[in-house]
Image: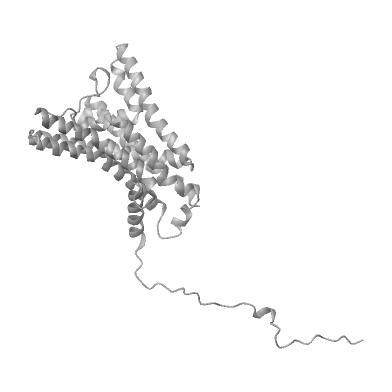
Length: 306
């Protein structure tokens, strides 16, 4: 029995002819390929601006700008007092300023280190960076340099205020220039150390709140514990242990390097700072922590980029 086959009408569309190509305006790029160096510089610039809330919402600018003002305000007051009283020296030395203001610096690191790295980890955007010519080392180097530069601006700006104020007060130019140079070296080392530690701690957790709490805990609790142990050692006449205990806190590490090599007065109990030999150990430990932080960040982002 013959079966009638349906005839294809003229309006019927064959199943294979349903695909359509629409011109939606994509254009090819024929310009120069700027490569890794440009991508690294762009990431550094964007991260540095973000550390002060530039290019972000107004709410994001409040805390970093407020901390910057808080860092510079005491320096301005000291300059005003020095000029008004015609004092022969500044109330606080250049190398001591950052140590005295370490709570503000720690708060800045705690607020900006997670902002720099936690969001990329939390929203898993790290592989998008590595889909371009940029590599893991480029990303880590740019983030590290950006936060260290932001910290250097935060800590060096009040030293510049003190230096200019000292010159306006007609204090000895050679002494003030030497002290300012020593202070700049000190805050540069502090910026590298605090930036490395802050980024490593923040990279451990993608949650920004946890990162802030962890950074504050490491920087402040370690300083409190070391200071307490040093005070106990001083009371018990174990003065030889004071310098070695100072190796276990980032703040006291910088203080030990300053007192050993930069002519700063020691903030350790009894004014007992590290000797030159002990100061070499302080420098090696500080540089080792900076290098270790960079290596840990590289490994962290190699895993995140997979």
